[in-house]
Length: 166
Image (cartoon, rainbow, N blue to C red; front, side, top):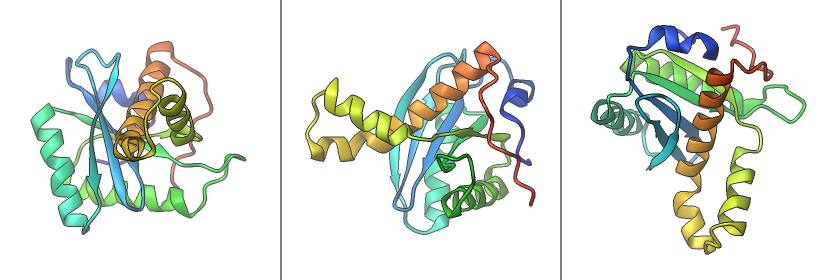
């Protein structure tokens, strides 16, 4: 299924189906899941990236096990709003995964999500560096997914990442 605009996502979902949030990095993919009302995002797991087939299988297992019906990817746009190589990488990952899962998917601007989560884990949770490294990716995925869920609920006019021309 091709990429869809985030605000059109609910039209493509059955009632009560959660969404899966993804924070795609070079070494890991953080995953988060929404509740069935798509109100609250919770960190799920961090997938250590290996080969794409193994990564896709691990994500597909979470989708199947949780009944997720849509994916929301964090799109790491530059601070000026431009898309760089990291955005291209995330978009390619999404297209490749779409070939295996065929779920509706959308992107959410994730600028500074990892930084915000790191600050939260240091300041509020007072976590050690080692423990932060274990949870930051799935926590960032939850941050991304929560932002998207909040935007959907509020009909937010936050600047959306541009659609990929490809």
